[in-house]
Image (cartoon, rainbow, N blue to C red; front, side, top):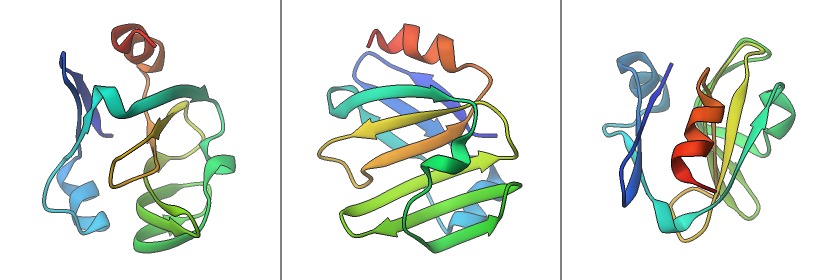
Length: 114
């Protein structure tokens, strides 16, 4: 499961080695805090998936890791099973949205002060 670190100017999303391998990413994701539009907690992250996987891996209702491209841009996903997740809407970033499974969603929102 990806780990999140909140800094005064950025949000760092540290992927596990397996997540980096599956998503074909060499680096972790770093998002400027000023580019975070909103953060939503969801119990069912699977309903938030849009577009087609490219590159990444999806086993429906079990695992989705990688980039999903859609008509308006692309999203990054790192979700597992039917666990609680956060949906981070972004502006002026490589990704339009980041979906992550995390057990610390309320703490993330509190630390981002959104």
